[in-house]
Length: 279
View (spheres, one colour):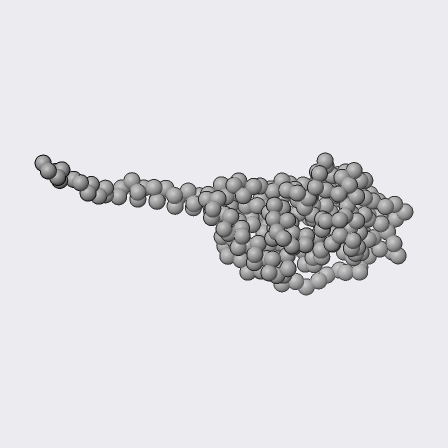
């Protein structure tokens, strides 16, 4: 999740109180109420030459006093989270919804890349505050799904490039092999735990984590997992030091195991001290 504060974000121009402001990796776009703004490969916000991304994906327009976002794509979904991380909505292909919070964090994945964009409107007092449940670290939990420590570490390793970006933008999701190496795990261990995490979240309705289902492609499940984890605050930038701790612990455990092998007594050969038959 972006760790920018309100003072770091661009603000609505007081002379244009109804405008919509988009912040994508420091690129700021200001959209008037008489304009339509398209996000996609070749849209008004030309993100990059990503072949997995629709040319015309998300469309923002002003209507009836509200800004609306519509998904005009055919197979990609987007996630919208309020600026405090308390409310999350999924925007499926063909769906549209109003932007009712003064800051909305838009995230979506296309192929191996996850994108994050801030959408900012004037605070008109429609929704000034929502109570949320916070964990022992003081962070908000949305639809929390119980995870073991190792499962959270796996998610954190995949989400590290996104969480390290100070603000909005795009980040490549690491391969399973790279994420396993980051943790000091074997690839077999990593893939086994990845299957467990995806199955657990799939059971509670998170899309895109298993193959053979509508909207789910197994090859893109790492990106879908990161999108869900970041938008729901399952993992945050504050958790990143845990990766170094786990890597060091894994290396120490491997060193201990190797030392035990080196110092173990060598059993005598089964043929030691025996003469051949017939001698």
